[in-house]
Length: 225
Length: 220
Image (cartoon, each protein chain N blue to C red):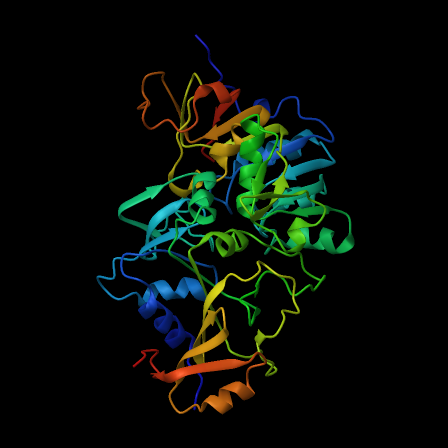
């Protein structure tokens, strides 16, 4: 049992995005999800710095530094795209107009609390950016992250130890081991990596996990059956 | 006829003084009025309160202000990847007010729109609610966020006419259009100044009533 690669995790998230949905991909690993959107999905990507219908990275030499994404990297505009100021952009985010926001995280708690902006390390300045606005405002908040930390501790916890971004907002968690839905009755395993037993997943997860029926199987390429 | 065009960046920052509050447009480099960055340095002012989305990177941008130690406090959403700011932050020589990005821009909008603040759900139940008034509306908790004003707002536009009407270029609009409503003096650095009548009225994002000074970026 090998945990999903970063590419496969991004692909798994991309395959779940609703067709024709309005979606914001957070900076870092979530941005990578754009590379795996199925052709014809019709998903319209938003970026907080004032653009709707984000297109792919331009070819080398074609970069326009007035046309960048939230990660400050050059992008392109798809046909039907638009530009707007930050106030209108955050009205989209805070006002419940985005169908899904995909965010990275340090920790998610069993009731969907999100900690993704600081580990409280005073050595470097903290940054909050627009993650908190997305976490409060998008209709669905999906987290994608490694299931455990580099030293093997669960990132899915009883209570977040790091400062919170928002309380009770995460609706679904995609990790390199599984897909978990955050429900009113706790965390429910929706899909499990091929070859991983549910008990082995529980061993790697601090918060309690429920299983309803047979979980779907996640293949190494990130597809789910 | 009204004409707000000034010679250069030095003229655009005329009157700035020690202790002033300054808004700087931009998200990363897009929308940052770079000529103003240099001109403010040349003025030799200090103890500025800077309202900006970022704190510069290690390159040729707002990081120059931190390197020169002319900022006393920054009100900011994402001061990451900012080497000179980080050094002063660690040394305790600069104050940071960290604000969620949407709250930052809405506080600026409130300042420009004459509002006493607004109620936001963002930050409820987190450290971002500390010390703020809580108000329940229809059963949902909000926090009272207060407006931001500035002595100067400096932004980067694409085109301006001599009256002071401004258009922007792509994602360089970001915080600029909102900041342009919230400064006591608003100065816009543009790629090109055009004649009155040359801008499509439907394309003007910042109407001239908000704009005090315009100058064309020098082609260096």
